[in-house]
Amino acid sequence: MSCCRTVSNCCQNNNDNNRLVIIERGVRGPRGYTGPQGFMGPQGIPGVTGATGATGPQGPQGLQGIPGITGATGATGPIGATGPQGIQGIQGIQGPTGPTGPTGPIGATGATGATGPQGIQGVTGPQGPVGPTGAVGATGPSGTSGLSSYGGLYSTAVDTVPLSAVAATLPLATTLPVLNETYGTNTVTVTNDGDYEVRYGVSGTVDTPTTVTLSVLNGASTLPSATTTGYLTTTVSRIDGSTIVNLPAGSVLGLQATSTPDATLTPAGGVNSYLIVTQISAPPVTA
Image (cartoon, rainbow, N blue to C red):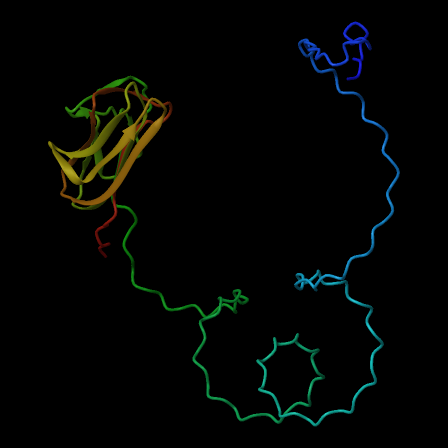
């Protein structure tokens, strides 16, 4: 039996060579840290090349390569036979109008056409020069005389006149020249039977705009054709009327006014109301 590695536990090389010595082992200590990797050793000698393996299956088609350069154009071949005529195409857009050609020679005069309808009458031409004076004609029958009667009244007074639905007599204080008529207070009396022209009117302002009706009286009655209506305002305005009426001798005419609504009339300056009576049917002249 050999001696132990440690001196203290080693058996002695003496006479106890055949004695069995039991050595008690202590608790194993913890594992130490792994040391660093060593350097790579040199490459070994290549082995013998093995036998070629079987051919594998065909792989997928690869991407198409870029086109090659176009080759030179070949020689032109012979012209082929003419093909059948194609279908006619649609008509093209009309081109612009060409320049006007030269004027052709004048043709022969055609036959005269039928007479057209008469045109509208033209504008009257200027008056021609005065012709020579003709011979004096024979004396005609005696005519009637001039106006056989006339007359009238008017006012320039500016005194106010109250107007309402009740007729108010308009003042007519100033007389006109007269023939075969007579005057009363604001009245004209005719002497002859016959047709008369009667003219009348008023002008001025009112304190309240109003509708005014002027009427010519024959006595106590209004002459139906000698009534007119107008509108007076706060500025100067006027109402006028006229008529032709048959009057018997002795008719007494006057002028009156009514209004709606009530108002006060202030006559305008100058002639502001009037009544003129003129006979227009004169009696025939006696020999």
